[in-house]
Image (cartoon, rainbow, N blue to C red; front, side, top):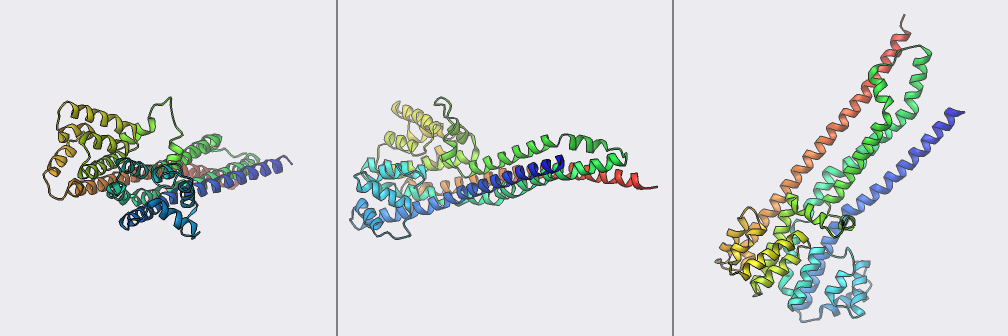
Length: 381
């Protein structure tokens, strides 16, 4: 009777664990698909704004008119933005008040364009930012999703079933035969709860890594420590994120300089568009150096420790076709390097986790075979 109750309790816990895994997998899948949907929505929204401005129509009127058609191609978030515009909000305010409608940096850039009185001026910078949106999604899907949502939960489930249903029966058989339990099996199955706990921690770590890869700001922005920009500091210290922040700053600065915005104002707005406090702090240093009479190409050195941004900006100031055209090659280079670093990190992390899980599987398999060998030795004449 006690064995039946124990087995029923174990099965109930296993069912709860599987339901929890299903909910978590569904949540991760939603997070993985959200950036691509948001990116496509941003491209459509930029095309809509640009088409309205080119035809001389009001952007607000165009959005409201399209929303009133109740077309299924316009999702609930678009309808929410249109509803706010109908209530008198400006476009930049409406898109900022509807979370997850557009990426934060795109919202910041469009707000900057509205403050300058020429939203069309900043649209090229928005398009520059949307070029690499698929890279982190592809990396997360290829490496993190399989480990986090398939292999790790399956391994935990197998360990639980073995620890609750298989190992006790094997021990009963060995006790009845007065067989000696191997030392490795004693160690492994005597600490099975710690192995399960460790694997659960690995599972949580994998999910956190996948979430961080996707840039799920709705989770990471919850982490605040007395106003200390911890997440922004981590983003700046992460090599691939730093390159993307530099790309964002450079693209926006190029657009503003091409539009004739004064250097100090262009630097300040470009820093705000990164949506990163560490970038804003460095931008303040650039502005202070500009006030001291330092040239822009020398002042921006504080934003890039390698010094590459400095000489590229200096060369761009003498190039024909504007800053954005001259710096586009560097922006593409930053995107490529960021993707390579992100890909390499994913390979190292996932390979290490596969090896770690392989060691645990080997320990458990060896322990089980050791128990079977002991049983066979006990029945042999």
